[in-house]
Image (tube, rainbow, N blue to C red):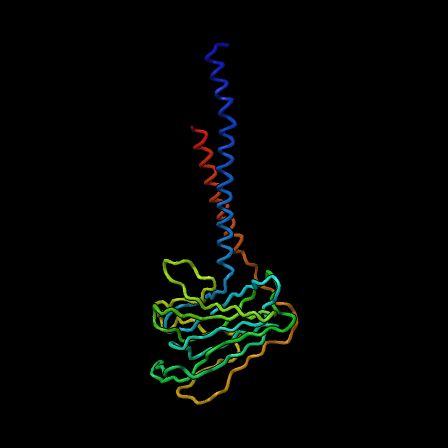
Length: 271
């Protein structure tokens, strides 16, 4: 064996462990980054948020609020959603659910509002759901609450729906912080959505069929009554649909991390 061959073999033997160590480090960093991505997505999706079935101006929509229990020591016992007053809903009804009692409360508006030619001075102000002892939300649980509302305001209007989440230890978390473009998301962002262009008159989303009787606001009414909707007294636990948000986010972040690690390994081997 010549001296040059011996030096070449030693050089290759010396570089191989270094290449392996470099590749392993690259893959480890990529995997860690993917894990941080998953944690970030999970944190954001744990917020209380609203999903509108329709956002068409002038129409009706079912609004579904997803409320997770975020306390490790207490249960969620009550959820209150505050409805808009600048663009009030003239019709609000609640979808009943086992183990939770719903109450719609009306209040005078800060200033009269004209809706479809009628002057409105009072409107539904809040919707409150209160759980019985069996259906309070425990650790790592969530529940969805639905209301049917109408009519939605003009296109381009941001409809903010602040929510207050009450826990069994007396803690109240207010989801009421507005988001600002270009700035980090606040700790407790307010549930909201933006209305879009009006749909055809015949395509308006109808109020939920299973909703409790609507609390319709009459023009210039002086009534102080509130609309109470009591859910069934059954103690059968509510079975929520499987939530695949975390699984999908984790899979996507994992694939990104794997692709980054593989690309780094290929680049290392080519050196």
